[in-house]
Image (cartoon, rainbow, N blue to C red):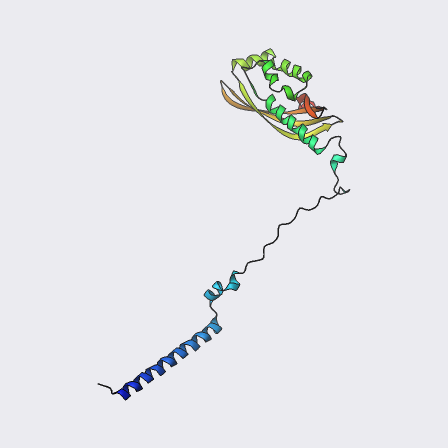
Length: 211
């Protein structure tokens, strides 16, 4: 059916009114639904949900506190400083590592030379004699034994005005014609102050005592 101009204007106006009403209804319904239910997705993406806690500044080092009866500085009671004790322990560890490292191809002179700077001349003579004992040296050679030593300090046994004795475990990893084996022995090792450094002047089995 054909519409004249007046009818077409009336129909167009009616369509506009219906669309406007529908839009208003949808707008009001959405607004009410948002207020009643809340939108988890909107909350998840809202700026408030992304607020992070303020950064906590790194704590500054606490100032050193003076020694007190409840927190004493034990080095005030000892004849050596913390640095000197650390230096003595280093010498003992180096010596023990070297003491446990040897080869059947070495003679006593070569073996002792490997620890020359770490020991006194008196101890060098004692170690050389022990290394050359016929029974021990003969077994070392016949079995082609080679040892790699490692050391661990267990405790501090004694100290004096210029000496410190440590209890040390020396572990020898021995390779010979029979294969490999481990031998761990605990020793008492004493170092003495020589000038501004330390040298080992005694090594005994820990069970024998050393002071």
